[in-house]
Image (cartoon, rainbow, N blue to C red; front, side, top):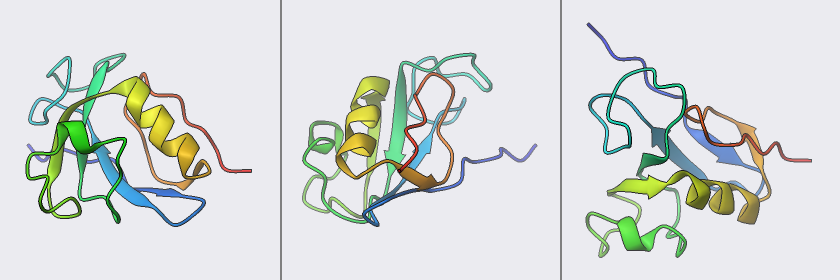
Length: 100
């Protein structure tokens, strides 16, 4: 079975990141299709983002690593900092802050 991944999030200022939550991701709960995720996996952001660095697997390569078990609230802060989302998908439980 092929797992469907969320489309990469692109923010108003051009910042991008992959935000995933499924049985194979570093997330809570670690199941497919949960009604709500409280922590998610972020991958390969376009730039170093200090709001994510506490969860970096390889902090010396901030744009070439994954960030495991990032609290959903932290994703909201990152998206807000970068002006909201213009495209992409977030796992259930994370507010989708649309760019204005």
